[in-house]
Image 1 (cartoon, one colour):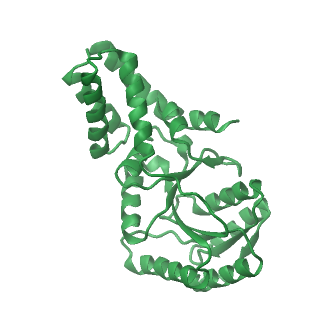
Image 2 (tube, rainbow, N blue to C red; image 1 turned 90 degrees about the horizontal axis):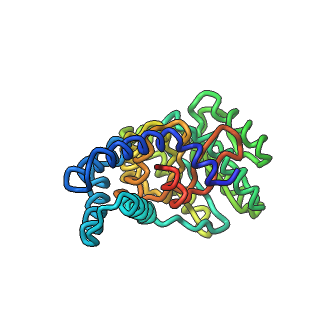
Length: 298
């Protein structure tokens, strides 16, 4: 199935929610002030942030009025174009090699599963991959990552449970350098952004990579559970303040009816979505595509 097919199917709940409300709006309202106010409410009800929704509808209103247009199709197409532009406000990072990607986020968002899928993605691009089990605190996290590493067919660097995560990162970096590995993927323990000691631990791992592997391209990706809606946006804002973020990986996109927070991620935070998880299988993860996301949204 193509990326468009996967995203279209994954966004079915969101699409059904938005499309129904849009149909009802066009049926009952002429295109005027009340129409735009309600259109903004539809976006907000789909978890587009208030600031982003106001900006989007402001642009739609200004251009539609400027063109003296009151045609449903024109307004719909215009809304799609502006939504796509909003997603593109945060440019996708170009992955260069050798690279290190550290995955961060709160508990339960699917970081370990995501790393298995991302490893498989790079293998399909004929890149060598190593994964580092730096989540040394969660029970069975190391074993879980080992299962995904076996499934993907990649090397894993690990220590005993309870070990210093930075020591795992140090060994993984040394191994990746020695073997001239293209991609090193680092799993980290889930942490709340309000836990200062845990955020400091992330910064320590960050420093290890920067110090020991300066020639590598280093990216930090935040993993977000799409079903949490605006809460995912709040997590992204907090993590961006604590550690610089290069991109976001969305998991469980197929389980949400309110995918609109993605527009706020890109429009307000200027953090791009890099990958989208659209199922449980190891190949159910693709590069994010703004145009196809908007087409699947409504």
